[in-house]
Image (cartoon, rainbow, N blue to C red; front, side):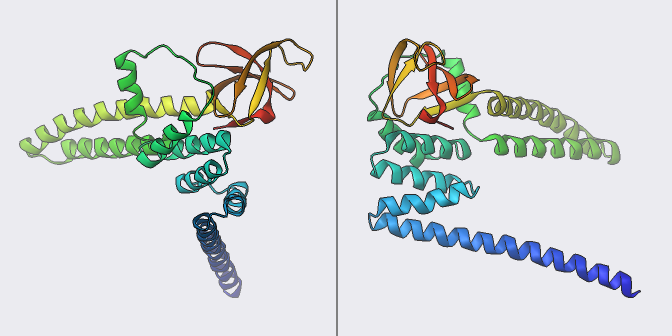
Amino acid sequence: MKKENSKFIAIISLIILFFSINLFGQLNTKKLMEQAGNLYKAKKYEKAEKVYSKLVNSGYQGASLFYNLANTFYRENKLGYAILYYNKALNLSPGDEDVKYNLDISKSRMIDKIDTLPKFFLFQWWESILALFNLSGWTYLTYLFFILLLICIALYFLVKKQKIQRTSFYTGIVMLFFLILTGIFTGIKLNRRLNVRNAIVITNVVTVKLSPDEKSNDAFVIHEGLKVKLEDKVDNWVKIRLHDGKVGWITKNNVGII
C-alpha cells in the first residue's frame, strides 16, 4: 500500500513539475516580449533585436514574435532579414493584414524586380483559398468535418425518425464533400512544407555562380530580400531558382529559409 502511494505521489510530483516548468517558460517568454517591445518603442532597435532573436534561438515560434522581429530588422535597414521574418509570420498567420502590408512595403524597397508570368485567374483563386489558413488550420478543419460526418452517420443509424435520418443523410453528404476538400488542402500544405523549400536572400549583394565552386563563372547578381527556391545542396552550396527561371549556386549563409 505504501509502495502504491509512493508511486502516486511521484507521478503527481512529475505532473506538477511539468506544468510549473511550462508556466515558468510562458511567463519568461511574455516578460522577454514585453522587454523587447519597450526597447522597440524607445527606438533601441539593436537591443530589441537581440531579445527577439534570443526567443527565436530558444525555439519559440509565433506570428507576433516573427512580425515584431521583422519590424525591428526593417528599422535597422536589414531588408533581407525583415522580409524573411515577415514571410515566417505569414506562414503562421496567412490572413494577417498587418503582416501583408508591411511585407509589401519592404518589397517595394528591393533592388531586384523579377518579372513573372501572370497566373491564370483560377490558379490565383486556388492560392487565395490555400492562404486562408496555415497547415494547422486546415488540419483542424479536416478533423472538424470528420467528426461532424461521424455524428451524421450516427444519427442516421441510431435515430429512427425519418425526418432526422433524411436531414442527417444530406448533411452527411455535405460534410463528406468538405472533408475531402479540406483534406486536399491539408495535403497540399503538408507537401509544400516537406518538399518545397523557399528562402530569402539576406546578404546585400550576392554573385550567383554557374556551379558550386568559388572559381566557377558568374551567372548573375542578386540582392537582399529576393525570394528564391532551393533545389539542391552540395556541401556549403545551395542551388537556387528564381521566379523567372534563372538558376545558379550560392553559399547557404547568403539565404534564410522561410
